Length: 72
Image 1 (cartoon, helix red, strand yellow):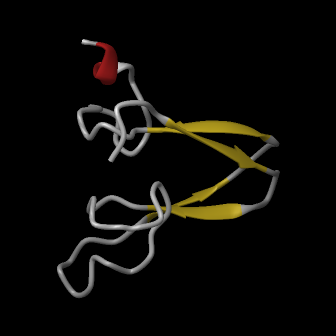
Image 2 (tube, helix red, strand yellow):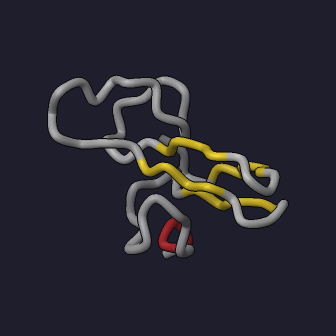
């Protein structure tokens, strides 16, 4: 976990798998640490080149994406 969002660069058509369980050692990406707990990563396929801001604090109401909650 981090107090700041993770900056993830993506290219159009690329799929990234973002952790939603909080156990990964390769944040913000899934490394399979969730096991068989019924939690799965978010598969995000980029529709254009750009930057994703992924929550690092765990407070976002738009998880796994940052909504600025770390600032409050």
